[in-house]
Image (cartoon, rainbow, N blue to C red; front, side):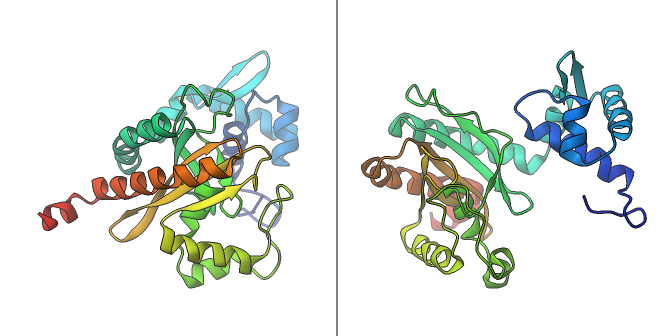
Length: 257
């Protein structure tokens, strides 16, 4: 954890956020021991923070531990920008799932991660894990790479750094120059792909979503590895990204009429 209240001492806000983030990132309730290990905070501090958050309604508690509450989800959903983006995207997400048989999702950039803010499942994607709220690596997922495609040169250099990128599977692209080449190709094709790069058994196709000339989100379909399916799904994803961008920029459509 970063420190901000004297050397070696995280602020109260740092502690609260760290606990909330750990609970949000977990697929199950966390005990005090779990949270202490995940946050690096003393158990007494975690105990105090957790029960204060329960009192505020931001965490809920049961016999098996603490988890984020419905109130916290509701607060996050009140962002006007995010609410509009999710509402506008839903028809295209449903259409993508119906046409491809894969799950579709929408993500935004959040601290150098792709934050999944909406998802739709088809009858053929029941085995896919639920990802809403997940923060995915930018360089190892199709939806993350679509967000990366909006980085300018200096932003991309900062993100890539000077060494190899973190591998998640044997297929993860870890060499920055190879990732740059893939991003360049995506600018021409309108889509970017991933082949079991973050999770074995999962591939994806994604397209960036633009507003006011900037990439503000990405839309994707995710399913079992299948080169033919990926190629055939690419056109649907490209169209969905384009139409969602148009929906977020109605003034451009009016100007073209």
